[in-house]
Length: 435
Length: 99
Image (cartoon, rainbow over all chains, first blue to last red; front, side):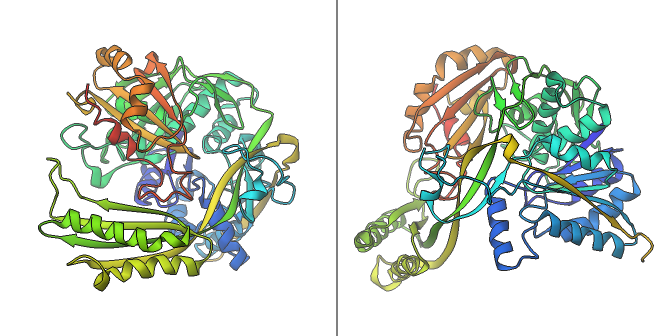
């Protein structure tokens, strides 16, 4: 079967996904749009308006993508439901009806475990109880392929989820089409490997790879996204459409294979514990790389939960200096502003950017950047005010002050027993008769 | 010679941990990386960024070295005060290591 990757993060480009849906002969197209912190931001939006909380680009993406995907019989699986998969399902149903396409939309819920999470549990990152980090606004368990499978079995054309482990978005369609048991650890490990390589989309086709003169990537402007041809035993060939930009090579695949892996001997996902020690990548043609050798052990008994909490506010400000002695004037400004803010007791960081050129000599343009974490926006304004005041109370020739204060949702993790997480699938039918 | 001359690197982030994957352009240079780029050298080279331990995995099947760097992201992507809150640029900083 052939599975494509249409997005690797919430801000990804859409054109390569539409191109894949149109011309790659795909069975499934997966759009991974939830980074670690993205769902907490969605929860923030949902708190302000209960109808929101799904990916803000969902409607715009689907308006262009779904007509092409539906016409070519490509099933679309995405976590763009974010903090509100039910809301995302309703929007998608209305959009499909409006476009006269119709179709079955399956919504997977149950990742939101805020009502049952023990906030006295220690965070995995620092051992401090979850509740002591700040007011908790969200808790989402990383669901596995087992949560998606019922949606696929019910014939969904579009599957919308909230928090699901990234590779699981791929494992579910692979298992569904290739008839794998989710307890067949070698195959689930192989599918997880495919998902892990595809989940960041352009990162395996040469996006995030180019280093001019050293690692050249042809046609970066027209970067294509990847797909995999997956055999029943789980071995796979990664490729891209021939007339798109980018490159699929052993080097791009190797970089992606180990990306964000904190233990290559046991990479834990909700579906399997994946061992990379025998994984191989071999060139199998132009822009084609074969991956094999995944080994797997039984899935963990606990699911990881991503917990969002109110961490305060971040003030971020800058001012530029240019011309002779610019670096020393920027440094003086940094010293002055940090001294003036010392009494606040805030956590503050001042960087002088661009102070040294490639030769190690000071350059003629530098920017002072001041950042601070503050408990409230008013304290953030104090930081911004002191940077702004450098105009006439600091070194000569400062210009271009920008200031910003933003609320910060922090993220910590915990583990929850699998049995405490109940998932559901709701199927919505869009009426295709309307036009 | 800089590490940048013979190898490429990708950084990933998980919480306050940075993962640095290092690969030679030529597979035959893998043994050179194994000998010269120890966990300690990575920690010393990136001492301004990494406050915790560095653990190295050797993956000869991929000609890769994987460095797990703890306390490397100023608390992590959401609350970090760094300009690059994900620590993505650590991959390029590592390649400035002199061999």
